[in-house]
Length: 116
Image (cartoon, rainbow, N blue to C red):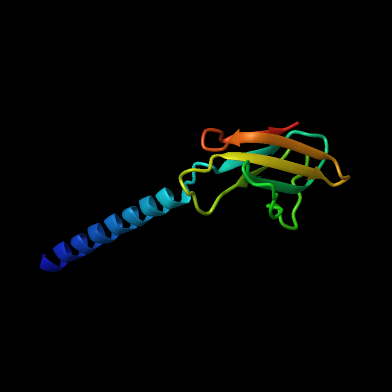
């Protein structure tokens, strides 16, 4: 009987610990600027740049070596939220050199960004 109680306590403790870890990870993983980028245009996107509006530099391509085909979506996630920067500019470039821009997007309140 004593062994059964110990097992229940251990399992309850492990379950509570796992639940707490998942909740902590979700709290840290959920950046208010994360968004889904919808490519509703007729061209495949080769490059996507997201930079704070106050910055003149586009920074690195967030697609890396991948493409975002026409009609597809991609999740865009941020690593660290400083609590202040919500206004971002977004630049996309198609495989044929086409360009599209969105300026002053409030990513703290927008969860989807669409290029058509």
